[in-house]
Length: 58
Image (tube, rainbow, N blue to C red; front, side, top):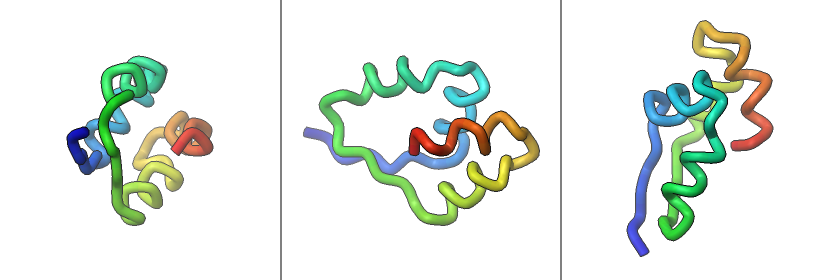
C-alpha cells in the first residue's frame, strides 16, 4: 500500500470540482496523509468559501 501526502493543490482542485468522491476512488488502496497547515488552509477557504463547506470530509 503506497503512502501519499496530499497538499492543498490536490485537495482544492477535487473540492472545487465537487469530486472528492473520485479522489477517494483513486486513492482507495493508499495510505493518505496531509498536514495540519493544509487542513487549516482549506477550512479557512483558501479564497474559496466552497472549501470551507467541504472540509468536514477531511
